[in-house]
Each structure stands twice: as C-alpha cells, then as structure tokens.
Length: 168
Ligand code: UDP
Ligand code: MG
Image (cartoon, rainbow, N blue to C red; front, side, top):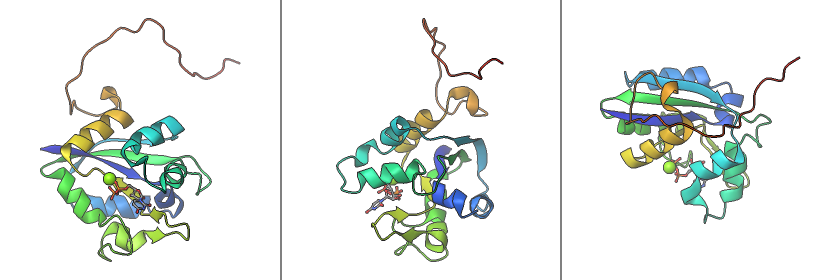
C-alpha cells in the first residue's frame, strides 16, 4: 500500500478541470485520504519545488504554483491511498511535458506549453515513495488525513502564533 500527493494546479482549477481530473483519477479505484484547497505561500511553493531551484525556469515555476499566472492563489491538494498508488496516478497523469504526454493522459489532454516555456500540466503527482512522504508531510498535518499514513507524535509548543478571524 502506498500514498501519493496530487495537486490540481492553478491552471487545472482555472480551466474548470477539477471534476474531469477527479473522474479520471477515480479509474484507479484508489481511496481519497485527504483533500483541501490551499492558498499557496512562497515558502510552501519554494519548499515543494526546492529540488528544482537551480533550473532556469524556477522563478516562473514558483509563480505558476502560487497562482500568479491564473489570478488566484489556490491549489487543490489531495492524498490518494491504495495499492501501487504512485505508479497508477503517475501513469494516468502522463509525461511532464504535455506535448510529449500520451494524448489520452490527463496532461496530454489538458496541458500546454506556454510561450515562456513553462509546462502548464494541470496537476502534480509524486514520483516515488520518498518524494510522496516529503510532499504529504509538507502539505498536510496528520489530522487532515483520515488515517495515519506516517508515524505521528504529540509535541507541546511553548509559543503559538496563529492568524485567526478578527473579533468584531
Ligand atoms: N517544468 C517545466 N519545464 C521543464 C521541466 C519541468 O515547466 O522543463 C515544470 C512542470 O510544471 C513540472 C514541474 O516543473 O510539472 C516539476 O518538474 P518535474 O520534473 O518534477 O516534473 P513532474 O514530476 O511534475 O512530472
Ligand atoms: Mg516531480
């Protein structure tokens, strides 16, 4: 059994592809273990794509995942769980470059290459178990996932600074 992170990227949301993508992913018969809309901060974006920071398109990539190319800072993050989850989801998504992706894959059907050379490929999917663990732990807290996909522990924080709704 495996878990994998799926992100419906800002272009996927803006193109109103959420339903189509989730329907395609349901072909895998995997279980959705977590789902939430995320307002992507620069820190989160840079941490998610930290291993790409030497790439010439890194700046554009961060802007893309932060929603700067699609007017809204939002991404739909999901965890899929089940047998061979990583490979099943990866196969359905298709190759990174939408022009090279199988035309019936999600990226092949809906992705595009921008004139600036960024692959707007509508979704992110983890490539291996190590990456999935790093990414799931980055995007989700243990209680946001319906069961413990990784070991947890209880800690006590001394000072907690949190943004809350302003009192009237
Ligand atoms: N990317 C790009 N140009 C490239 C390679 C990657 O724009 O030449 C973008 C693309 O959006 C991709 C993301 O960077 O999804 C992360 O790249 P990675 O190689 O990890 O591809 P993925 O795992 O998403 O298939
Ligand atoms: Mg990758």
